[in-house]
Image 1 (cartoon, protein in one colour):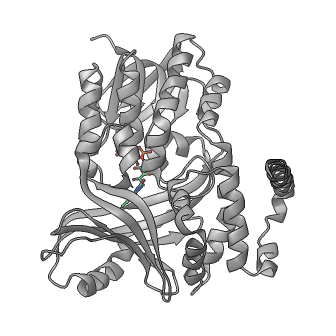
Image 2 (cartoon, rainbow, N blue to C red):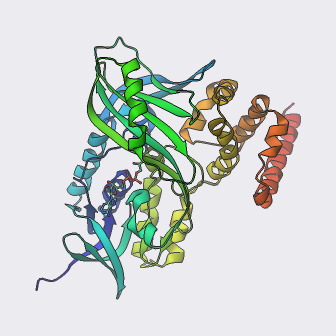
Image 3 (cartoon, rainbow, N blue to C red):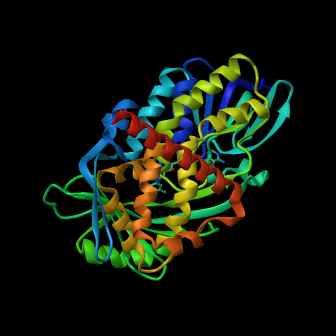
Length: 412
Ligand SMILES: Cc1cc2nc3c(=O)[nH]c(=O)nc-3n(C[C@H](O)[C@H](O)[C@H](O)COP(=O)(O)OP(=O)(O)OC[C@H]3O[C@@H](n4cnc5c(N)ncnc54)[C@H](O)[C@@H]3O)c2cc1C
């Protein structure tokens, strides 16, 4: 019988999370990545920002560039000024795959099945064999069998997405990256991500509460939308999936750590997961490297690494803004208010989309929100079941406001 292959780290899942972790960690450790699909392919599609893409050295995958992202509502429009890009999603993964391989990582098309603990490590069973690893990184997204086995997700809120890349008649440039609502009772939206003057990714998406949903349910709406937008368009690639915004009860187990953002699985709230991974993967890999070198791979140490990825300001903002977002999303016709708020934010609105917050920004966003939502309704949305959190935030804001008043007086 042949001896079991041994690795320092086994990464299950070769999405953006698994592959970025593989690129960084294979610089120092013996890494195996297992992916159930053909590695380097995905059914997701990504837009990002020129500066982030440059910083993370994936500019070769850019297919279109824009200077704005447009949000439309029945009576309002907001152009979010930012240097946005759409990416060839498979090319992004291919770039990372090649970099990981060049560092010596082994990448195989196999499905993760189960694990059990053995001396000083974990034994992992895949569809094709068994492996030993000192550490297992779960990068299988929201459908991870480990998450399911340990019932680690508290809630599933999902954006269900159905659509595809459409080949159409030549469009005049410039085109914009756009989101607009269909104004139906389910609050369905359309996302338009141009790839070139003859190719555009067009999809419909719907926010669902406490369910994973089935993207194919949106097929009919999508087909109707396409008839209106691109009557002669031909679908050349299918894109479907769910962006989950739930919350995990635990972030790590002994010798197992989760990394990823199938939507925003870790922090409560919603966001653009691919962009989150770009922000976080180096911090994650640094934490894991230290833990591996010190051989401290217990749940407590690994949980600390996972927690370090949860930026406190972002989380506070998401908790607060989450309630308001629901107000816009769940109440028919109020999307207008959402766009009005973006207009009130002016150039600052881009930080909302980027998930880049400071206390100052959060204060401004809240104050401007009150101009859009009547104060009575605001009060009714305060999460009373989490009063301690609300009071803590109020205290933080008050200290911040007082400090800036004093600072302004001194400066005068
Ligand atoms: C249609 C669509 C459009 C999107 N648009 C944007 C956007 O414009 N910008 C943005 O920032 N984000 C966007 N997102 C969100 C983004 O795609 C996700 O947040 C991101 O892909 C999450 O990365 P991940 O690596 O954590 O998980 P995933 O991308 O879900 O990767 C998980 C990987 O694990 C594999 N896997 C699962 N189970 C197993 C198993 N048992 N064994 C082995 N492998 C397994 C899967 O096949 C998959 O490759 C979009 C998502 C969708 C669906």
